Length: 494
Image (cartoon, rainbow, N blue to C red; front, side, top):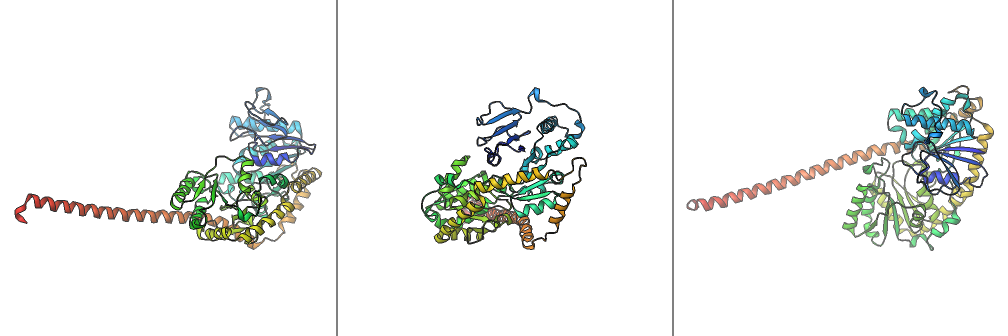
């Protein structure tokens, strides 16, 4: 089997997914094209990788590098009018189109959408339009994280681009049920092939060296995911989580609090808490995968407070390593965490609710230890490396057997099997409770911004009162000084 992956090759998720098929005997190709940054993730250990420039790149000996911008590799420039105007994008798509025509891959797999859709998904769409009937490969898209929950809401142009891509995709792999529904509303008419984590499965045996011996309740480390909207991440609510930590500071003085991926605003707030309450808070630099696993493996609690997400890798790794998860109550998370059984679910905009959950996680040793045992079973049964690899291989084999859903000779139409598949799924009744949760996820962001505005208004009121106090004090000082001066100048009038 020959697979062409189109993804961001610097990403650990992409590397771990592709590595699953190292020993499958397949011909694997990974296309980067236009990149936000040059490089190849050091974990990638198989395949031919196509990047803009191969200079100064260090890769595994099992990886072959090819440049998409080398002078000898530039393809013919006919049919340019079909492509974006920017010259580099034009070369990018033309090279991809030529590569697809030459390789004739059994499957083209776009890994992830998010901020990468213009160089991971859109080029495939343009190559498909350019090649026409010569584009014979089934096109598979797998979503990551907040791909469909957050990203298409950024602008009308962005949403239209996502809709154009999804209406052309043949097959879809989701991380959760929510995203399949969203894909349908955004124009996907192909076939969903199930729910798989974007990063592949977990090798529990290899994780053993990172897991601290003894009960999870004996650990004295807390991990907080430090992303926050104030630092440019619209999904993160680390500042609210820090407010909850402050409310539990009496229980945390013997803990090491590790804040990962923290921006400057979160750092300042955390340092204020450290100074005010005597807490030990550290901000590790970029953590390699092994370093992160060591931190998670010695942690009692892993906290992530966000307003939307898919299936986070940090959550899966916490489950595998016995760390107790305190996570936002999101539909995607609820597929894995049952509140007060194998974790605690919180409202991401409510510091009191988060503090209450954190206090329970810090004091209920029995819950923490019981959850660690249950979560290891969940990972072994549903997320283990062999389980996910087998499902992924079966998914690819099914795609090859069935072929494209879209008729390559009739752009924008679907063959009979694709229509029947879409009609079957459209008749499935919607789960009202899940829709309500999804709407709540959308609303909490607005509520949080309103609270932030209210807090700023209150702060301004406090500053105005302080200025009034200063003004009154200054006026009193002036009056007193004037009276003393008058007594000196006119002593006879006293």
